[in-house]
Length: 251
Figure 1 (cartoon, rainbow, N blue to C red):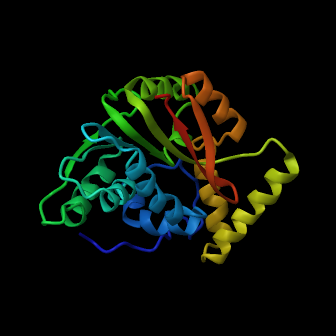
Figure 2: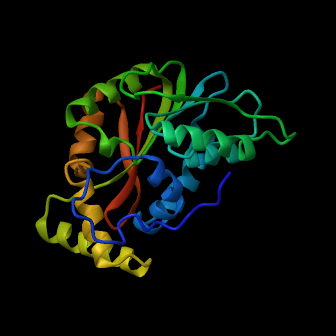
């Protein structure tokens, strides 16, 4: 497996900034990109496994929807050392899946060195069935879905969760109050600058993500959780304008 590379995709001026895509170029730099762009990323990923350990029910599955290079799946594996644990990890980027296969071959192992029971699929998460789950993870995936696809996906997740099951949803969020939105947005730009991104890189990546990443408010997420049929939900983590939420199905 190739070493992770530094993200310099937007370092030089581009004649035309194309819509962002999880292609080979992005996959090569993805670990560096997300670490330097998403405040609190490592905390959210690390705690995903801890949450899974609390809510996973033997005989049920864990789903990692939009698994990218498998960070959330690996976090779950580190916390649940059980050969009966079954994880289904999905992503619709062939480049991500190809690289993720190599990551899992090296890192997703039982304590005895055998491979974990992980089913890795290149698939559309809106079309893939969710069955017999107790933990579903949507870490930085939901924000890239069309708005009209979001409630149907949550309804499918609720239907596929066992009683007492949990959804972990981590996202970039926006705020209804303009002053709060502006303050936290500006601080995120400062976070990127502090991590070595130039103003040119920040501007060109923002243009690439425009209309591709559609962030929503806490209130919108919470209302949708209620509509989908979750019993209750909460925000358990926030760092600037990135956050993670739990939505739990009634027992």
